[in-house]
Structures are given as C-alpha cells and as structure tokens.
Amino acid sequence: MAPTTTPSSLPPDTRPLVISGPSGVGKGTLYNLLFTRHPSTFVLSVSCTTRSPRPGEVDGVHYRFVTPEQFASLASEGGFLEHAQFGGNRYGTPKSVVEEARDAGKVVVLDIEMEGVKQVKATGVEARYVFVKPPSEEELERRLRGRGTEKEESIQKRLRQAKLELEYADTPGVHDKIIVNDDLERAYKELEEFVYKPREEA
Image 1 (cartoon, helix red, strand yellow):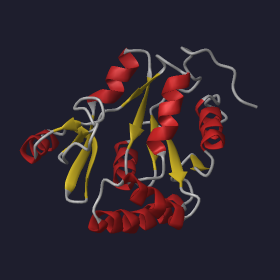
Image 2 (image 1 turned 30 degrees about the horizontal axis):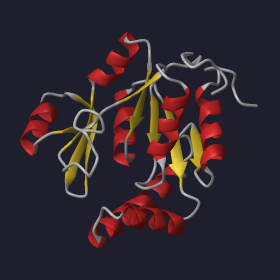
Image 3 (image 1 turned 30 degrees about the vertical axis):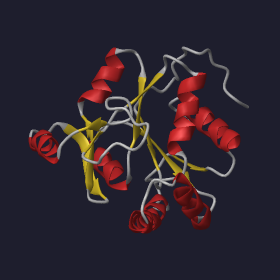
Image 4 (image 1 turned 45 degrees about the vertical axis):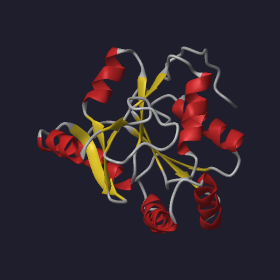
C-alpha cells in the first residue's frame, strides 16, 4: 500500500537518503519524481565536480562546477563528506549539505557513486542507502547510448564501472534497499514506500 502523505510531510525517518547506482540507470528521474510529488520536503545535495557542464546543466543547480585547483583545495581542508574520481573528473559532496538540510527542516538526498557510498559509510554519518539497478546490463548500455552526450570511450568506462557497482551492491548489508528500475512508476512507488517507512521498520 502506498504511503498516505501530504505534499509537505516529512517522512518518519529524516536521515540523509543516499541513492546510488550505475550511470544511466535513472536515479535522477526517480528522485526528481520524489521531489515533484513531495514539494518542500526533500532537497538534493548539489555536488562539486571538475567536469564540464553538459547541455542544459546549470551551475549551482545540477552541480557546482569548479576547477581542479578549487576542488583540491576544498578536499585538503576536509570540506567533503565524500569525494571520488571517475572518468578523469572529480566529484564531491560538501559536508555542509547535511546540516543545511536539517536546519531547513528537509531531508537531503545524495546522488553518489560507489566510492562515495564507501566513504560516507566510513564517516559514521547515519544515513539510508538505496541502490538502483538496471533491468540488465544490455538495457543500461542502451540508455547510456541513448543520451547521445558521450564518446565511445566514456561509454565503455561507464559500463566497466557499472559491473563493479553491481557487484558491490550484491554485498550483504551495504544497501538498505535495492530497486530494479524496469518500470518507472513501479520503481518510484517502491522508493516512496521505503522513504516513508517508520525508522524501526526501514
């Protein structure tokens, strides 16, 4: 049964929600539905990255686009909750995002990769972990190619990384919930039900 909530209702468990999964699996589509259907409840952690913006991406909304030097400086100061390098670029979640969300009375959602998940777990920060899986590796490749934004070399790197992430997700106890994104609405309902479970049941 789907949870009964109002647009502004906080879930019983307000720990940060960490959503991970291979690039192209549809993580963003899922949590954007959560934001749309529960306005003013959730806030997306805006990560820093050294990569260039993709068409349509806005600085400060999709990512905070920084130079490698700026990133290195913040990392050396211990300013990241987690940070990692992928595809020649660096990505990091500023530590301030969790406190900012709590102060605003919202639940922060972190969209991070496997190495980031490991780092957040190592910090001891209490969070809930959701992994989004593709129906198959073939479908994931189709989705990546369908973007039309990446070169073949980049696609192959992402597919190799996806294999590692899927293997890691199979490790018992790593994630609190694994969702197969084969049907968007079904996968969303599964995510929403998990998010709104009382803490003792999650």
